[in-house]
Image (cartoon, rainbow, N blue to C red; front, side):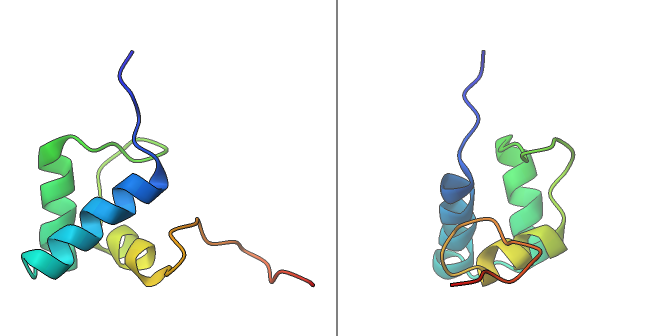
Length: 69
C-alpha cells in the first residue's frame, strides 16, 4: 500500500517549488501531479488548491468556522 504524504509534506513540497524555482500556482499544481503527489481526496491538483495551501502559514488544514478561546 503506498504511503500518502501528510498535508505538511505536501505544503512543504509546494512551498519549495514556489520559493526555489519561483513557479506559478498553475505550474506547481502541474508539478505535483507529475510527481504523483496525491491529494487527500484524490483528483488532480488545481492552482486554487495550491494557493490556499500556501496561504495557510501553519500548514494545518483551514477550518470553516472561527476558533473560540
